[in-house]
Amino acid sequence: MRPTSADARRRRFLLAAGSALLPLSVTSGLAQTPASAAPLPRMNTRPIPSTGEALPVVGCGTWRTFDVGDNHQAQAPLAEVLSILFDNGGSVIDSSPMYGSSEAVAGAVLTRVGGHGRAFVATKVWTEGREAGIAQMEESMRRLQQPRIDLMQIHNLLDWRTQLATLREWKAQGRIRYLGITHYTSSAFADVEAVMRSETLDFIQINYAADDRVAEERLLPLARERGIGVIVNQPFGGGGLLGKLKGQPVPEWSKEVGCTTWAQLLLKFVLAHPAVTCVIPGTGRPEYMRDNVRAGFGSYPDQSIGQRIASAVG
Image 1 (spheres, rainbow, N blue to C red):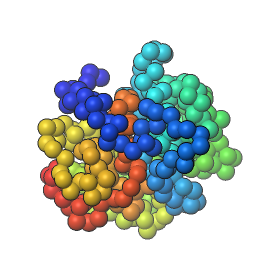
Image 2: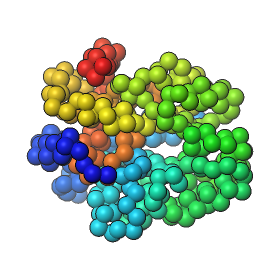
Image 3: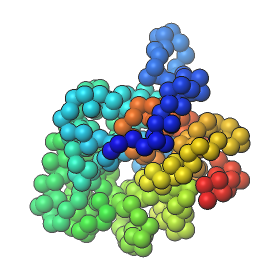
């Protein structure tokens, strides 16, 4: 995907100002810390409701951004992206067999940076039928070079009853650690809600952003009630929100929650909701990852600041 003019402006700003704006923990990809120095601060975590396991709050999505095939040169910045994520205490990497070569690229890059032991790997099953689902998940494990998947999700609820039965079997066998369902559009939330109410799930993955708040009405409260973790995709409104905000200065009050860019502010808006466990903005650019991980540190907006953010993007 060709970078937009907004991409170019954001990249120039971050490259010029990044080391001055970001704490040492976030610039760990740029400078080494002496072994004798105090430990770096680590990214905030939240407990996975079904187990209490701590999960870092900012991860990385791979839709489109990791679909680069076997091009070793194109994979180099992706290796830096994951190194920055890990160096700052992040771990969640989300993919899917419908994302072209992204699963295989993620697996290759994890091997390249020695990241398999540091990653919380999430992917999806996206097909109909029991045998087809099993075959697809086994292929995902091969592509990701993972003997076990941390989180297997039913992509867009496709044949969810069949696939959920298999996921329960795989979880009992230790082939996956957690199971869940996903969707990317609020038009499907009624179906997502029905599954949340009828089944035992570890996670849902849904769209939620400062300009896309339908999830606040029913799904996020229901997730808290049912003890289901929430991974948020499209925290930038599918990318359009950052484009809409280009050229606008970040409000002065954003400093109250430690934000210096719109991306950080939008991610912190999502993480301010107590039902949200982790947010997974997709990126293949190291400078964007350095920016995104900043949202994993410090405090989060209270209701007043959250309303200001929503008004600013409305």
